[in-house]
Length: 104
Picture 1 (cartoon, rainbow, N blue to C red):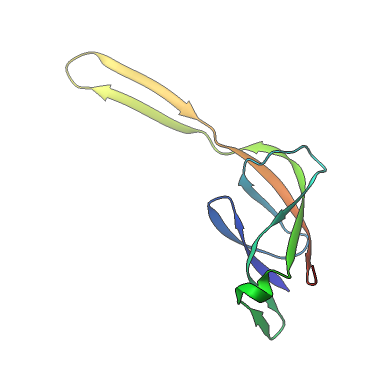
Picture 2 (picture 1 turned 180 degrees about the vertical axis):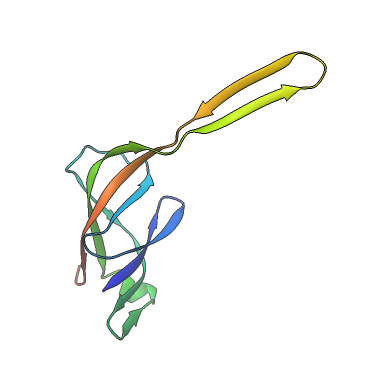
């Protein structure tokens, strides 16, 4: 069984015990969060209707906060002696999927 969930601004394919990085979420390590399901596949059964998807719940446990890779940014203007170097690391939250359940 797996599901497609909306996590932040992206869609992710998840199954039970998967770990994934999502945009930063409010909460501490050990807290439980839930994601809205967009599609659920259970063997040969595919659920995609909104009325049926409302019954499904995808729960996850927050593992901790992590940072993405460093991105280097260089600003340069020719013939003026202007140079500026900046960097950025996007904050993410690592979550572990604990369940995909039907019957809310």
